[in-house]
Length: 238
Ligand SMILES: [Mn+2]
Image 1 (tube, rainbow, N blue to C red):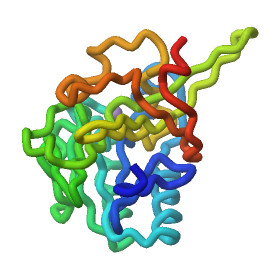
Image 2: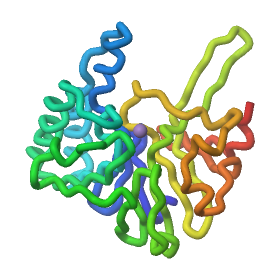
Image 3: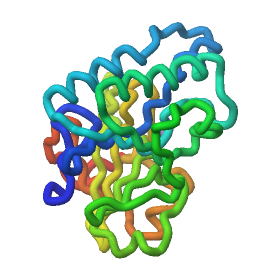
């Protein structure tokens, strides 16, 4: 994995050459919570300042977003009309190019993006023998000849509960060796929750890509955000 991509220690982001890859921002998620009576401060300032900090350290020239930049699946919420274009314009002000592979939450995305943001097909695209996509849709056959497929979509977490009932969930990088291998990215938005992969995982939750690649999630190698190797998923099944 490290030969092809460079995950950033401590962050759900990785580098391929001078391109930063992130996914699952779910901008506008606060709005969804507010409808259920929970008020969160908007996360957009945190995201932009984090990306500015990473940019000053890593000097990437492109940001590739692997889907779910916004939260509403079908329509566009009032908040998204404001924050998605303003977020993208702040990134463009950093003098980077932006490419988006749409996710399942990115309906009508074209209306929200400045004209110089590149929007790819949902089936993804390839750079340096690495196929990039969100992961809710299958890639084309040509992706089989890539060395690695990077997807997002699952927001993978592992969960532990101790004897007092205290619960922890950790976002993880999920790596499966194969031809091609598969890497699942953690969500960039830490508030959005995710799929607990170490218990009773139903196949319908993990999307079509695992079956397409004939990969078994149980064989996955897990890494924490600080890039410690945690072990195979089979060690964590509860
Ligand atoms: Mn998502």
